[in-house]
Image (tube, rainbow, N blue to C red):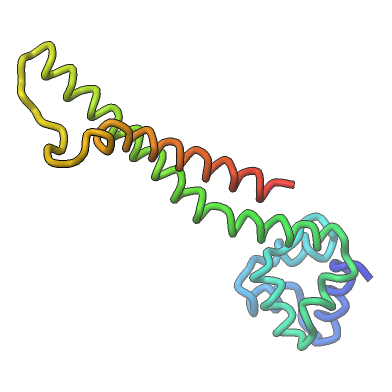
Length: 151
């Protein structure tokens, strides 16, 4: 039995209308209608709420419908991906910011005659290559996540 049929069967077993079910899980009646006609699928959070409401396992709701299983798998990958991607993108952007700042300071010192020092006291290697290292780490990390979470 596919998800849409199972959902309708369980709802009718409880004697609820689509509106009553929608109110219990805090969605619109139209959403319930689309799920029951197979035009759309709920999120994993709603599937968990439905399983609790009907007293059946999530497995019972998911196993029979291949398309829904695929959607849940894709949703879970998309949920796991952004947190680390944002981190690595931020590291990359920090590297870009430091590189631009360094270029501006060098240009000001050279063309305007200022004497702005770039982190005096730190080894020259760190001040020279830190922006590039951050950009490299951020870029590689972001790319690895992209490849890991896309089928």
